[in-house]
Length: 331
Ligand SMILES: C[S@@+](CC[C@H](N)C(=O)[O-])C[C@H]1O[C@@H](n2cnc3c(N)ncnc32)[C@H](O)[C@@H]1O
Image (tube, rainbow, N blue to C red; front, top):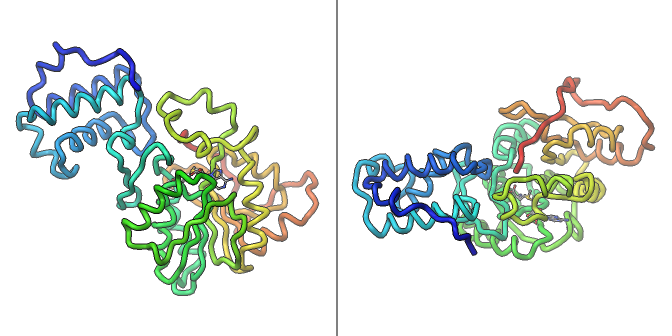
């Protein structure tokens, strides 16, 4: 592990306070072209997180510590973390072993992708508009659960529901198990080692999925940080659609007619419309305006998959206009 490249002793010796360290790490992250986007927006957020972790402080307590001299052991720990981040390109969340989504804490390590899904907006803001009586949402599935983060958000959003969460990676499910237990939800979230939704028994009121959706060829071009994540969490065949194809076919048999399927699809907006021209999908709004999450009802899913695919204009429910193709975000 690691490379020979390390921070200079001369530069490090000059760093006295937490603030010195913070500015230095931000500068180094920028200088070395660190890629963000794995749960953080910029160098500042990552540097603050590393500093708080080295000091053993919650992030909110950091301001006070900035003016204090750095204790020697914390400085040594921070130097090691910074070197791993800067030169080995280890993502910050793997270095600290934790990530936050929707204000909730999750354990993460290299067995799972770092949580950063659009479902953090979609679960509290959009899904309740389609399933307004949360007491009637009793059966939920989260396909491709990874760390279990969305299963936990769903269980909290729908307190009467049981959630079946699946993943093809046994490693990921071990992490999910820990997170489900941390949140006291082992009674209501059931983890399944399976391909997409295979073997599950319907009917479900709600099926959610944040699948791998990048075309395989795209992996090569991703920054080094993203290569530390499991590739099966990112890519899904030549066109990115392999898991989504299975998901639609399986979900059509498992969703109740009133139920809904909600899927995050990154930059595949046009590909979805082209591949399933008869599917009556609704693109759900997200804060950044990208059309990267669609919703389809159980009844519409059945209809859309059984019709013969002929070149036709895609229809969109509720008369929502088609906007520009969702660019998605590199994840
Ligand atoms: C993009 S990650 C999403 C993880 C989590 N739901 C989140 O939002 O952070 C996709 C997950 O799908 C899993 N996966 C890949 N192919 C799968 C398949 N055929 N069936 C089930 N899970 C699969 C990966 O192991 C990974 O954990």
